[in-house]
Image (cartoon, rainbow, N blue to C red; front, top):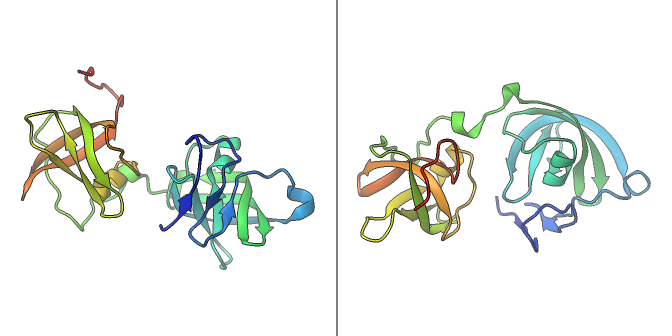
Length: 208
């Protein structure tokens, strides 16, 4: 979504500095909430949330600008992620750069769109899986271009992976050298991933 952030360890310490899509710095640190900023209770709907970036946005019911939701706020209140479409009630801080969720009062996921339940993407070809669930290595992936390639090992053809397939199964990023579990099939120009899961998911085959 055009957002950028910096994090030294990749772990959520609650003190990392990030910038949201509007250029607003967010640090997930709410030490001086009561005295420095006005606290507002509001209800809304999750617009999107990216666990890889560490934040997302809430569309408030009363209109106005989106409300920033930081992963530190989620996890402190016992949630691991927030699904698109979920109903949420929060206390938000009215910061100079805009509203930012401070405390989650409640979240109702009955209206949420879980990634694996979303309809198949229409912007690229869908394939029927012909392979079993196999462990593949990420050979190359470019999030901006929206695709990459996986490999079953030397002597095997590369397997195309589309960004929208990742999103359908709740993943947001791939790194070269990373291992994943996938089923693939024959596409118009070669092998394509039909299903992808994190390494170690379910009844994963043993590593080789």
